[in-house]
Length: 556
Image (tube, rainbow, N blue to C red; front, side, top):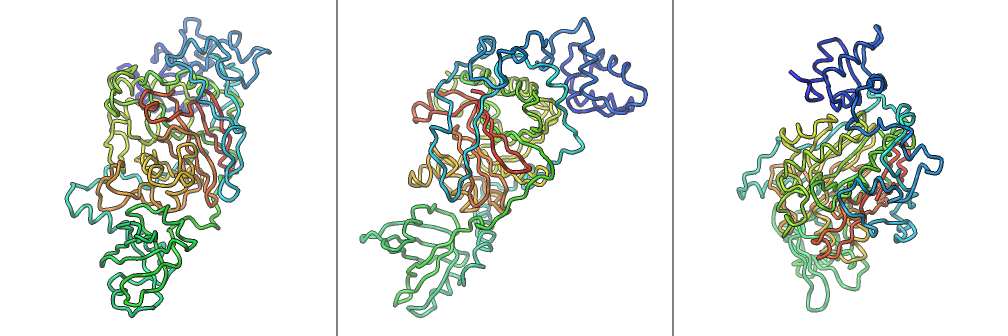
């Protein structure tokens, strides 16, 4: 049987007594004649070698005079590579190579670039300093000398995944399922708040005399303004509901503008004379502790964080993707050993009105086949983690399970790790909360512009961290699945929060949590024009896991 897939290559190697680097397997899988390439590689392997390395496979394939051009363009002729030319710098601006432009099926989007000079400065309290935004390598060719020196030791790679609900879904849509998920949300988030206030259940508040000091932890069930301009916030716990009043002239009145229905908060104050309402003096969110100290890796290693690739769209920026993949093969990308993709691998079908008119690939499974081909351009020894998004072929309701077995097989070239949306992914001790980000639309729509906007998507992500829940409001545009457990709660404080969906680049720090919305790889669609979204396309935030310093690379 022909060795058609990486899994079969690994199995064949095992039967012959060899292990192999992942990139070596990828190179063999991409060879015109995989069986012959494997035989040649093993024939020339030293007798004492037990592992087939990528460097040896490259050397074997390069010495084969009958070889055709491999799918991995890392083996291009150095003499023809633009990056070898003394006139071609290692970092160039977009569109410098006519050859690169010719490779793209999508038009260039000159408006998608974001410069640190034009972005609003981050806030002094919660944002990180602006990273240097540099340009990626342009052109088809990457010198083979550069690539040979760039190797990843698979023994040092470490990925742990927590919160993957794939295969754990129990919801049937019954009323009892909704009760269970909200009860779980209340119980778990209230535990984070009860240490800060002297909480009393709602039914106990009703029995207290007037003018007593009291506190309650509850889920926001209603928010409305009184005739005098004060705010009436009704809180609910497992025993009932109780009204609280935030006076418009109190400093905490601004916090009411941050509230969303169904989130869990705590309030302290004084009961009215008749005890029927609580006048609020302070309001508390579950929040991230201001003293939080993130963990870091024990060695110099980096991760690239991207999202919203949208292969299959006519606006997919293939040229930018090629530049990004080329750059990953260079010495300049030394240390970038992880690639985290936060959803929307493909454009999907029927996601928004008249989408079919903007599709380059009309069948969703063909879109994943095409995406897999683009993924093969990434170095084969990189560790890849992927979660789904709302354009992917999984259920729309969150939490979203990981891709099914058929789609995993389609995208199996790199032996990527597939997990649910959201998931907490720990890379060499650094925890990264990966969430596609559909709820950001709702947060931005509900909260004031200074609290959340598309121009600064990281601020909307700050709100999710403050609420310790990635999709707190039920019943809006964000579809939420009733489960016995609320998988959308942020139980553990992450070191990095990575999201996408809104197609805008944004980054900052919230209470020392590095927060990144990674933009997209798709130029503006007609639908985005209709909702006034100008995407930031072709960016790759690179996180140094040893220092948590951020650099944003531009390939658009």
